[in-house]
Length: 427
Image (cartoon, rainbow, N blue to C red; front, side):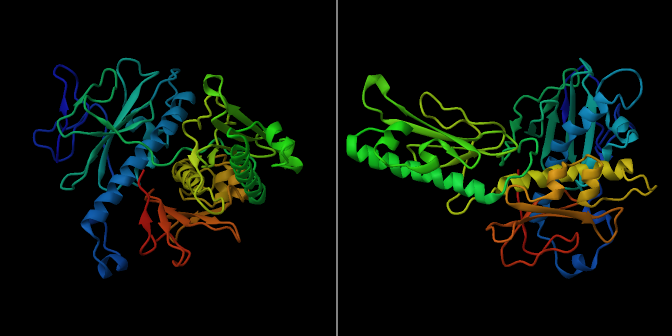
């Protein structure tokens, strides 16, 4: 076990279970998620040994996912004054558990968590640390109100006053961009039509450049009959299409850019698209794309893969939303039946823990499913499956909080057991 050093003169932040000379109790209680070795072996466990490297990767991914879920939990605690003391401040781990919000940490087996408000300003600042449990390997992670997650060095110094990232901490960047607030779904044929139109614009620009050695505005392409129909008018099935050609230094246009934005965001579309002379089409879920004076694709827009349009990263992020939603549903007994169990997707939507359009589906070319496992008070799983006739991979997550991708040949899971051969997605 690797204890973290603490700045001299400041109160201890953590008391790690099993550390030599650790105090009997720390100012904040530690949550220890049980490691696989603590549980009775299942039939599956006795049949196939777990690869140590894979087990380590899964433990670390679950701990990181738990920390990424904490900002939402802390916001609910603060905004609802759930400790009922008349102050809108953040909570310690004990306070979060007392309010029924600590369940997001339970899925991270083999990790010890410390959560507390920063002493400097508990109404604005908080931080959390995740340590490997005694006897287990693994990295130590840190997060705070900034929602960023850091990998800590073994000798990191923690500042409990301000709750700032320790010196030398390395931020762990998310692999996938976060989705927007869910919007009403738009059918995939419309998206494909818009993407095809941007592809046609790229072909038209290449033809225009061959003719006049420059790129053109939409009117220029229309005058030469390189685009026609609705595209020539800058409108296509609820999308507004704009084109800009830029003349650096007043010369011939040598760069161009086109954007396709929904005419009414959330009604005629919930994805914006952009492309330029580089020939790669990008998509953006958070907001419409603005034409750039230098024809640059905005930061955060994601390139579409070659082939049919499938928004796999949006499906992954939607599953990430379901993970803390299941914990909150169980801890709160949101259905009010006196049982602390997990939920179906429609029950999560009914409790306003996920958006109704995710439960109603389809969204981003995927249908989402979630339901309790064989032991509903302990197990659940969720799937993101491509719509019928849509290409794409299937994604799986269960109570452990780690998202897996299934190969096309793998059968669709019907219970909370992680499918054999599924590959975890690291964030």
